[in-house]
Amino acid sequence: MTARAVRNRLNRLVSEGFIEIKAGAIAEKLGFPISADIYMDVEPGLIQEVAQRLVDLDETNYVAITTGDSDFSVSIVAVSMASLQSIITDKLHAIPGVRKTKTYVLTSIIKQGIISGQLESAIIYSPLMLKIFERLKRRDKLRLQET
Image (cartoon, rainbow, N blue to C red):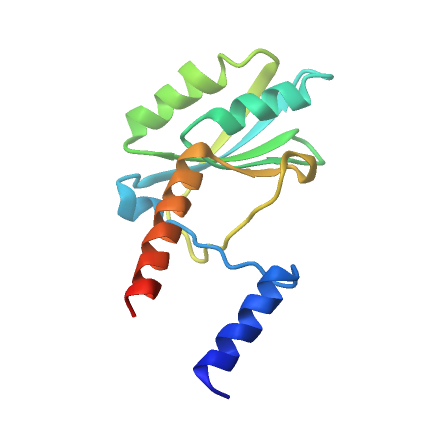
């Protein structure tokens, strides 16, 4: 199969919605060596409002509404432990409706995948990650045009 045929087939699969091509940033290489998973309990009736506030934070990698003991699972990146503490106390605890947080600092990430979606499906990219993805997309588009 020629490169052109592969490219055409790939473009068709993307345009018809069968596959998506996404990029993931490695936070540590971008100057955010601290990663933490934070589980949050929220006042009843405030899930969507809290979700939007979490999405708006630059430090969130993902925000997911969960079932079980917690209402949210949030992935946070930080430049230092002091910065992580500040994010938790000054930003997360300041969101109206947040009752409790439980933080797990990640000591080693074994496998890192790409997650995507919309508020309705409860998994959302942060503004910071979207900016990084857009830059990567533009860079890759320029590289493809140069070849």
